[in-house]
Amino acid sequence: MIKPLAIVTTAMLSALISDLLHNQAKAEPKSAIPPELQVLEARIGIWDSETTTKPSAQVPNGSKTHGVETNEWILGGRFQQTSNKNRPDSFDNSLLVTYDSPKKAFRVWFFDDLGNNVVGTGKWDEKKKTLTWDERTDEAGQRTTGYWRFVDKDNYEWGSVTKDRAGTVMYDATCKLKRRQ
Image 1 (cartoon, rainbow, N blue to C red):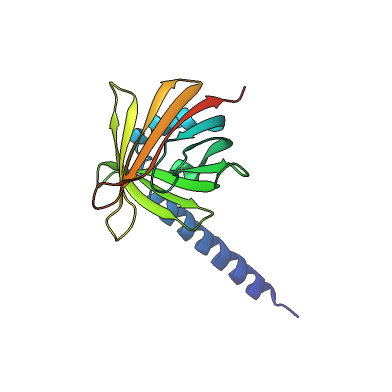
Image 2 (cartoon, helix red, strand yellow; image 1 turned 60 degrees about the vertical axis):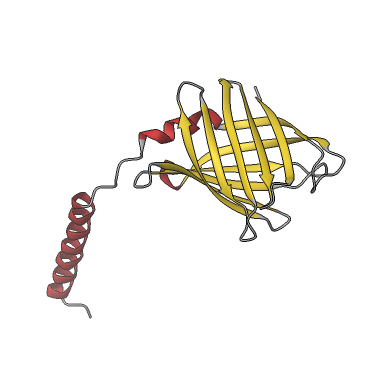
């Protein structure tokens, strides 16, 4: 049999712990979401993409592919997640993008279904409405440079060039994306 004093003590202890946790949460406010992330808001939604790849070491004949890109905010609006569905024409891939306030730079992590991954940093140019990217592709010295240009609310485009240490173009592509209505 539970004694009335035990019930009261348990209820008081539970209320005290709840109050302590609530006050701790209020005392440790979340850091503000960097305003620089507003730049990425233009990418939110579903986009039809057409990618043109020029002949290069990795794609000797070049190609033209079509896909669907979906962008959404995750993790409390601090990261933007991109999912690109390009099969059967090309590889599928995902990206995570955010703004790193201490480094004063955008950050991107790219992964594809071929096992490739790239980490890069970006800089916003308000006048050109363009994010430029610099990415170290691998330890062998490949480097990728690229851009995302926001043409208008329903169109954006990107370009990407990867070169090896000797300057040989390994991959060179541009993409035009149109928002689905």
